Image (cartoon, rainbow, N blue to C red; front, side, top):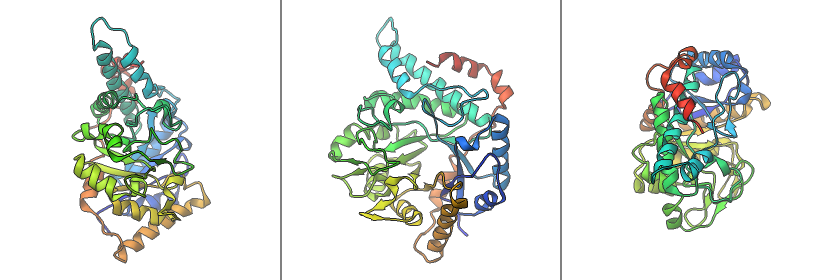
Amino acid sequence: MTLHAPLIIDVAGTRLTDTDRARLAHPLVGGVILFARNWRDRAQLTALCRQIKRVRRDLLICVDHEGGRVQRFRSDGFTHLPPMRDLGRLWREGPETRPGEAALAACNAATAAGYVLAAELRACGVDFSFTPVLDLDWGRSEVIGDRAFDGDARVVTLLAQALMHGLRLAGMAHCGKHFPGHGWAEADSHVALPVDDRALEAILTDDAAPYGWLSAALAAVMPAHVVYSQVDARPAGFSRVWLRDILRERLGFTGAVFSDDLSMAGARVLDGRPVTHTQAALAALQAGCDLVLLCNQSPVDDGAAIDELIEGLSRAYYEGRWIPDETAEARRRALLPAGTALTWDELMADARYQQALALLP
């Protein structure tokens, strides 16, 4: 049908059903996002990932696995990773005998966290994690909170860069989120539409600064379901101003852009009107997203929302309302992991992994 597979969907349980396989085989589907309901133990997760890759080798297997309270797999040997705030605290409060020593130790620990995170996931067949969080901790947003490294954009940038380096050492790409920043808006976009009423220059100076400083390194970015009312009436993930004019042109970002979950409340109203998942997906793609996520829908009504989105985007393609983007597809494929992953047993004997564990705060 098309050379662009922008849809990232979920599956219902701990193994694929025939319905899951049919959806994943559709040419518009580019990947799958896993949740805690898809986990029982390492052997089951590894088998599930193999099942997915047997459907299509190019499917991107994703997960939200940051550390702290956002970590989908927590048992059967998976390391309990610290919240990112712990790395920021190490930067500011760690022991040092000369200036800057604590900051360097925090960066080393961040690299270690990235390596452990990615190596453990890859040992089970997972390709990609939506991390790091680049939001600033303004002390206002409970949904961000300790997921943020720090309140200083410079500290956030350097710790994120170190964590990204650790991910890359294990062959995994990364995704900075939530552009241009979710730390100021107090509402939770899972259940409401947050609004940030600051001026553009204030946002660019602080919250969005890491995206410019990391523009040469970031593999992917996820925009926030937040309205920045002095910049655009639409949430950032549906805004050509934010995605094309600012992220691409002004900040020079060249990687992939994911929408945040289209089932979240912050994605279900555009221009003051409720929208369907298909309408939200088309708006995100036309604004500049390369990939769109629809999460936690396969257990609901047998996944009717996923089928409706696949059918709706297919119809938009055939009717000329959506034009596939080969460049966006190349950006999706660039997120697939590099190199062969260590098996779990090999990882347990890996000197770099053991050293990384010892460096975690």
